[in-house]
Each structure stands twice: as structure tokens, then as C-alpha cells.
Image (cartoon, rainbow, N blue to C red; front, side, top):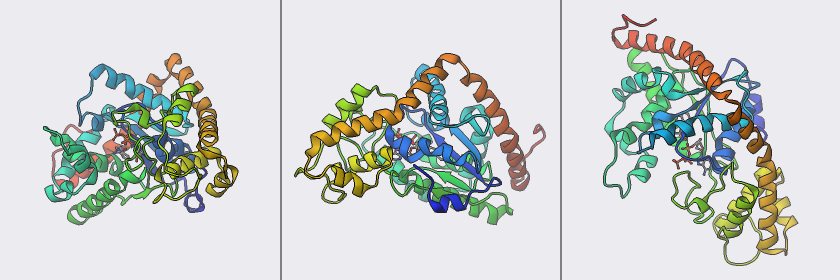
Length: 343
Ligand code: ATP
Ligand code: LTN
């Protein structure tokens, strides 16, 4: 979980980091290893903005009461996973009107063809009778999130790479057409842990919206539940604990999780379980993951009962708006839109 040397070399307080997480379900260890567990690595060296992107979540139907509860819960998990609101700006996307406003302008420089090529859209739309226009333009809203803050680096899991590339393309296209306005951001995807797979089907990524809850370990799962889900996790044929994503995708995924939560290399994990079979490995894996997540669970419960989050999110939205509204003013000016009531 330490930053790589390339990440360390590029630490620079004048550089900005932005990332977002949807409050579309309970966060799982894929979200933790690919995104939120890494967010705090940047807070000492970079100017960081982390948002709970609730406007993205409503691209598919949500229960309003649950959505609001999960939005606060997701922000609490950011802090429980190590973010310090004194060092980092944490806010809810819909509290800041600049996001939807810039998204509209960017939709008018995006093409139907390029949005139709987004693989996440294709995956999420497949087999659905009715798909919202919001799901189609989702990546443009994500580009707006990133570009509003002159973001340098976007820490995300592997599945978001194509969306960050679209943000880069839109920034370049807008700059060419209207004059330099946006910084062109870089995605930062972990070498290991950027794509944690489902425990039930190792060909699919672990996902909040998978209908089988046993396919994922949630960050707030109690230890018994973690142990039960790992026991039930599919394994491959043979008994060896070997890292071979082609031939042994299920075991390789479990080894990756073990390695990232324990800090041991894949070779160390392999050597430790040589000749021991899956039972002992899975029970130790559950222990390692539960222990690592224990302080996160504890801090989360404290935060939720303290009621502190509301104030943190209000301050965060105000800080974010100072930056985003100034960028929005510049955009309106360049495009030729009216800004009579801007302040
Ligand atoms: P959904 O299934 O509802 O689309 P999700 O689980 O993919 O949700 P997001 O809110 O879309 O979660 O993603 C939050 C962050 O977690 C993103 O940076 C994303 O790349 C990362 N992420 C999501 N799933 C995984 C995974 N299986 N492995 C690693 N990173 C992941
Ligand atoms: N689409 C992202 C969530 C997201 C995001 C962002 C990530 C919305 N806006 C800006 C990084 C930067 C996802 O996780 N599915």
C-alpha cells in the first residue's frame, strides 16, 4: 500500500489530486485497494480533493433515503480509511453546482460516437430494457469533476482508465477550440490491486452492484462474515497456492488480496503456503483482512455517532466551490456564455 517510487518522486504540494467514489452501495475491498485506501497516501504531498459523487449514482435508480444515508457513510469511510479533513478537501458532488454546469458545456464538445465506445457504458447498458441518458453522459460529468480543479493526478482503479483518457481528450479539444483553460490530467492506477476480482466469478471485477453480496468483502463486514465469504470463495482446480492469473485466476486474486493487506510479496505468500492447501490459506487470509480493516471499522462507527461529518462536508463544499466557480467563470467567458449573476 506504500506509494511506488514514481509516485514518491512526483510528490509536489503544488500538484493537485482529484478522485471520486459513488455512494451506490457499500464499499468493498476492491474500492479500498484500488482507490480509498490509497487516497491518504497523497494528502501530505499534494493538494487533494475527494468527492462522494452522488450525481453519478443517480444515473441508475436509487432510493432517495438510502442514497442520502450512503452519501454520508461514504464520506465517513474516506476519513476512517485515513483522510484528514484538515489536510484534504472532502465534499459531496451535488453540493457544488459547478460540476453539473461544466458537464453540460463539455457534453457540447463531446461526440455521440466517443461516448458510445465507453466500455463501462456498454457493460452497464447490456441487457437493460431502459437506459438513462445520464448513464450515457456519465463519463463527461466525471471529466467535469476532474477538469474543474486543474487536477494533475487521478488515483483510480483500472476500470476508470478509459474515462480519465476521455477527460484528457476533452481538455485538449476544449483548449484547442477556446484557448488554454484546462490542465490535462494523468490517471494513477496501482500496479497491483487495480482490478480485484469477484470471489464468486474471477472473470468479473468485484463490484458494489453485483447482485450476489458473497462476491465481495465489504470494508465494514464483521470478521465472521469476512471468514465466511472467503471460505465460500471459488478456487481453481489443484491444491497449490500459485500466482498464475491465466491458469489459476481465483487463487491469484486471493493471493493479490493477501499480499496487499499483509505487505508480503506474492512469492512470500506462495512459500508460506506451500503444501498446505486452500483451507489454511483462506482462514489466514480472513484474519489478515479483518485485522487490517479493524481500525477502519472502529473509526467509522465513532464518526457516524459523533455527527461530525455534516460540518466537514459543508466546509469541504465551500472550499471546492471557491476553486470550481472561478474555473467556471473562465469557461463561460471563453465560450461566450453570459455570467451576469456569477460572483
Ligand atoms: P459499481 O459496481 O456500482 O459500478 P464500483 O464498485 O465499481 O461500483 P465505484 O464507485 O464505481 O465502485 O468506484 C470507486 C473506485 O473504486 C474507482 O476508483 C474504481 O476504479 C475503484 N474500483 C472499483 N472496483 C474495483 C475493483 N474491483 N478493484 C480495484 N478498484 C476498483
Ligand atoms: N466514475 C468513477 C467515479 C468518479 C470519479 C470521478 C473518479 C466520478 N468522478 C472523478 C475519479 C475522478 C467510478 O469510480 N466509477
